[in-house]
Length: 130
Image 1 (cartoon, helix red, strand yellow):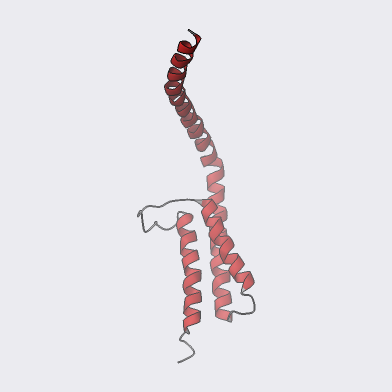
Image 2: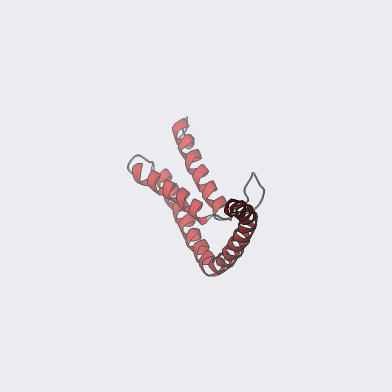
């Protein structure tokens, strides 16, 4: 086996890192989700994958080749920079939109839930009082 070829453990390690990296990119909305074929954004989930990679890099320190160390550090740097950008995008725009949507959906849920249960208990209460 030549120096350029990776042994099985090295290949598995790179595959594991790439799995978390790809999942983070999908969660950041930078790559389409292969299941839904749509861009989906979940910065909390992206943060989780970034934390997993960070933990792997920390725990594996001293056990990685120079190339593997650089690969995981570079991947983490790119993901963290993009995470910060996405987090900034979400805060000003999405917070006001989410609060409007939440207040609207909560009102709809409350009004629909009040109308159904309130009509039944009122009639039940009235029959009990009579």
